[in-house]
Amino acid sequence: MKPYPMRALYAGALALALLCCCSCREPDAAKAAQEPAKPARLVVVVAPAREQTLTRTVEVQGALFPREKTVLAAQADGAISAVMADFGDRVAAGQVLCRIDPREYRLRLDSARAQLEQAQARLVNATANFHRASELKENGLIPQQQFDEISSTLRVARADAEAAANAVGLAQTKFDYTYVRAPFAAYVQKRMVSLGEHVGTGTPVYELIAIDPIKLRASIPERFVPRLRVGLPINLSVEANPERVYSGVVRRIAPALDDASRTLLIEAEVPNPDGSLRPGYFAHVTVNLGRDRALFVPQSAVMRYAGVSRVFVLEHGVLRSREVETGVTLDTGIEIVKGLRPGERVVTSDLDRLADGLKAVAKEQSPS
Image 1 (cartoon, rainbow, N blue to C red):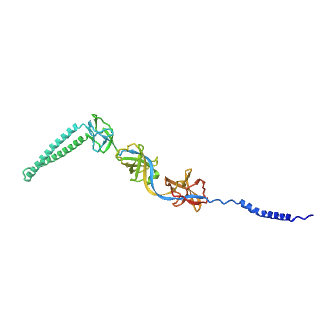
Image 2: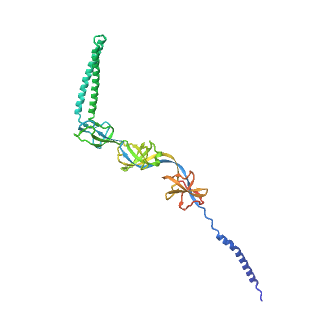
Image 3: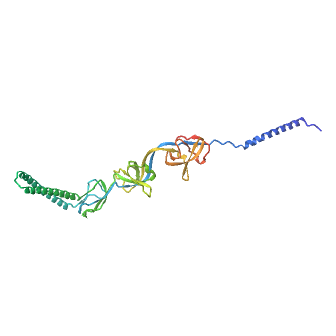
């Protein structure tokens, strides 16, 4: 048997060594393949919940009403002898609107004045007689009975003069009633009589409305009632002139809520010197309820589902899903009424990819 050459022996030894080496490394490679790769850090954009001054308002629908509305009735009997105002006219306080035939009332006034003059003349005469009688009585020149009669005549004359003066006053009042006057500055809403028409006491003759200032009435939801008070400013606009904004002030607040709607009626006065606001208009009303401090977060930090609002709060590197109660929405963000504290950091992006309990690293949101 021939011995193997030396080259063959070296080759065999080398192969054996490589086999041993590979056998030793295979378990390490398999172990490395089984270990999961370390996940990349979750980076989230956050912003702090900040307090800011908020002007509280409530927007409601309202309606406009006259400041005053009255139906004038005749206070004297007779025919309408003159008509000085008509439908749509603007009239001043005390302005004559129409006239009832005054001739009969003039005669009664003249008669009452004549009777007053006679009564005053009798009073002058009775007074003079009384003074003379007093002097005579002091000198014992007339009996007591005659003096008493003169004194009685004076008392009757005084009473007659007073009654005559009252009669003149009554006749003057009746005469004045033939002038139908506006009791306040107003617009004529209706004229109810015509020239020559006979009217009696109590017959309606004019309907007047005063609209400067004009009244606004609106119903405020129950949750805003605690903030209501007399003197609050309001703004309103009407469909007839939507670009113009009118200002007014709350003047009256109802003492009780409406049982059906759970709202509270308020009444405001709105200056209306040009008459551009008319009774019957509906108005979009904003009531300024005052200012206070409120907590806000960016709009992108709030997600809503099934009527529930939530935010993700980053606490010590861990995301926490938290239910919150929201308030008003402004350009600067959403008000958080309940569920957050000032300074807490909320996530503002990719909310649909987050879950409660995830670990994350904060990246502050750039100021807008």
